[in-house]
Every structure is written in structure tokens, then in C-alpha cells.
Image (tube, rainbow, N blue to C red; front, side, top):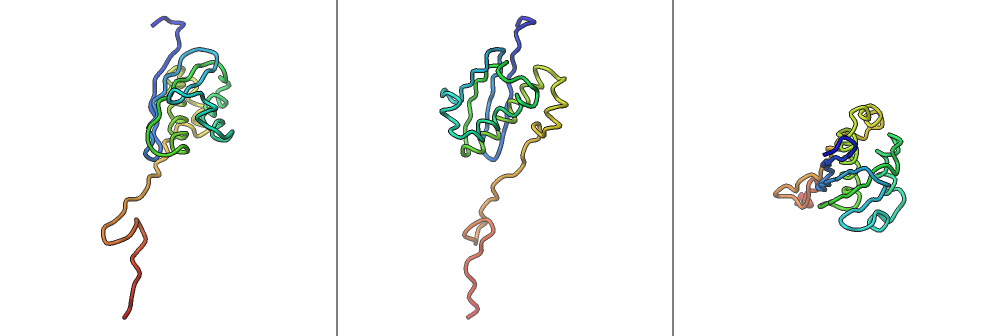
Length: 132
């Protein structure tokens, strides 16, 4: 790897989604699961959430992004991608850790779906109680 070639790989997780990100120096092209960025993420808020690490560090359109994301739904995958991008940026330049951390982009969201318990119809719900 040459000294001028900036590239990094990182993994992010959210709920049951896992995202692997390859970040290379480029013009800002982004593909997610082989599809174009705007095609995979149809709404602007989802697109902005993926781009949040770049906006926090003022590096928009400086890196190309290739993402492979599996599991969960679209929102879970977006959270996983956002964390992976932030981790990849810190791998490229450790100086970026402070603004990313201040924006809360390096924290893994620990919330997961609670498991269903036996003797109940769901995680918390109970079967109807009959007194008589």
C-alpha cells in the first residue's frame, strides 16, 4: 500500500444488522449491496444518517464507499453502516476521532430485540388471566 493511498475497512452492528465498509480515497461514490446509494436508501433522512460521519468531519465527497450489509431492516442497516463508516474514518486518520466522538457516531447502539419467553405469547405479554 502506497503512502498516498488512503483506504480502510471497518465493521458496524445495530440490532441484528452487520455492515462491512471499504473506504477508499475517491470522488464520493457510494454503493450498498451492489446498488447505488440513492436507490438502496429511498428517503433523505436515511441517506443523511449514512453521510453523518463525513459531514461531522467535513470530508464529504473525498472518499468512495463500498458497503455490504446483511440482516435486520433498513433502519438497522443504516445504523450499522453509520458506525462502520465512523470507525473506518478513525482508522484512516486518528485525529478525526474527537469530532466523531463528540457527534456520538462512535457509540454502538446496544438495544436489541428482547427474546420471547416460554409460557408467554411474546417477550413481555402474558396470556389472558382468568380468575374463574
